Length: 328
Image (tube, rainbow, N blue to C red):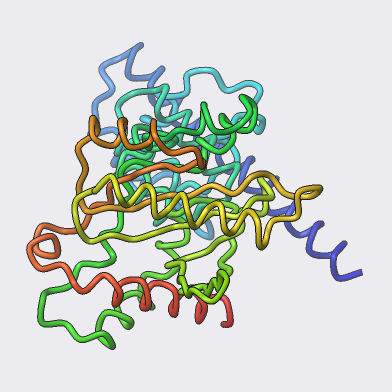
């Protein structure tokens, strides 16, 4: 019963949002038409805003600034039909404002609108993805997936990579303690998970592998619930070294053998996050690695790049706060 109530409320909310966007679009379209047909400058918007507020005193959204946004909304999406079926019609008004003010290219507006509608991004997440130019980073990490996986699977695995990863939440100075680092990551834990991408479920940090008496520890282990595959993530605070690819490939092979259920799961993949990389060196290193791995750079603030914390501290804090976020 509760599930039906929640579903009905969600449908009502979506319908109300769609109708509100339709109204905003129609007002914006009217303003554009009047300005084309007559000498109707921005000064008229002041009177129009006052008239609308006086006629509908219980309704918000009729400020001069918002009327200008309505005008830009109608100019960006020129055809109103089929209203409610486009990705932008499923977004809150605040996200529509961000699309029209932060992006000039209409194809990019539609791309980000589709992503936000599909993944259910909040407004801050959408703003972060736009500012970090997700459309250029998504699926961009160099990898050997094409040679190490079947064609269909390699394309799917490539989709979960980014290059670079925008990890500005690690903006700390060299004197920061581990506790301060952890607190900073608590403050930005949702942004961290959104940056990794949809579908990632945290499995553990420093995952222990006992291989015939020899001990090994995986920095971060995830399971991608949409792709049904384990994803090994290794962090390096240094520039990429070809030996890093070999180490990650070793971990991928071990996870694939120890944890993966072949009948249910797709092959395990690895993603190496490094402070810097030479793409030619990466390409040669990946060519000699048989396990499916990708290499991506991560970005911090300039201050953080000058004084990177200890690699193990990053790994511990990153994983501990992911665990705490899941337990809340």
